[in-house]
Length: 252
Image 1: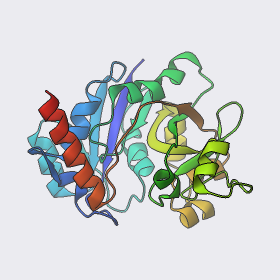
Image 2: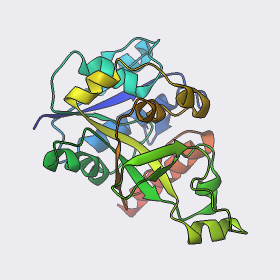
Image 3: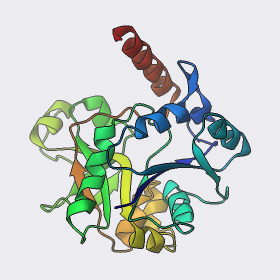
Image 4: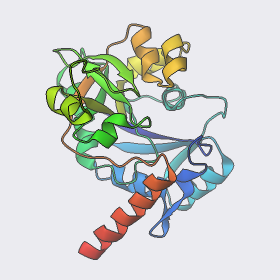
């Protein structure tokens, strides 16, 4: 099975401009992400899809495969679909560029259902929330799913809303609240379908592109992971990533 990982990489970011070029231990964030993906046992290739000439040159500089995509593409999924339209593979992955220390295990976990069930066309990751800060964070998307692990809804708000809980700690204890880790794997057929879908109302309201898929009736299989993933969305996330990297180097 031919499995291609695509890293959609936008230079502009509403919360942290140019974050993919931010330095961590002498390398840009995007390079750390790329090198983390190369450790996957199931992926055959990795392509970085950029929207900016400066990013393009940086990526070429560290030897990754890179393609320039139109700036007017609004979402990471749109960039993956743009690349997928020009090539053939059995499965395409969408891995955000601002996850410099993503584990290879997480990548393989999101791929595995496609190896065993041809009915599955979209997979993504979820992890149980165990802290109040994560539950309340408006930069961490949450997800609820059915008994077959298919997504019902995504939101930046804590879902499900635990009506009888009196405290935030009680909400976490009395309900399973999951965060969405925005790594996806799409079948070849479905990503080319997704590329033709129009943006939807809930997608615009919540600013979550995965809602476009649900509103158009597509099924998203959730894979629950025990792995943690540090995503860089804010200046404080960047500083946390630098500390994590430095501590990791010291342990070596």
